[in-house]
Length: 93
Image 1: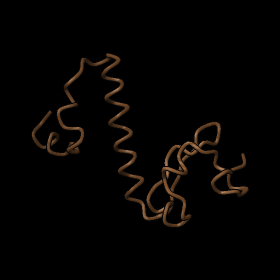
Image 2: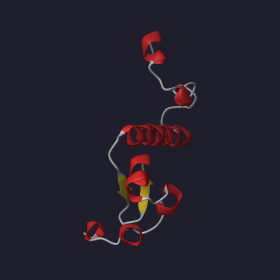
Image 3: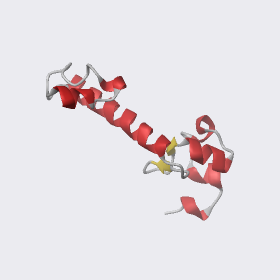
Image 4: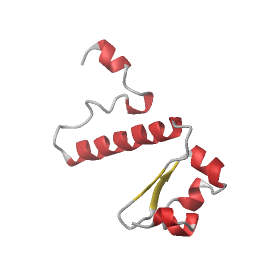
């Protein structure tokens, strides 16, 4: 990895890029954690309200703009069913 490539790694991921053996379970967990950190950073950078749901329609992420728009806190929203939070047809298949 070049010096320029290393400089582009977000601070919270530094030191993790070579810390595991490729293909190991730990390597997969580190990659999943890095993906989660990157995804959260992207969602927080969006000025529109954004939330995601899983296959059971449980809210899995809720950005700061979604909190401001809805008046519902992230801690209150995450893990709850979409229609419990929004009470709208938005949450139907």
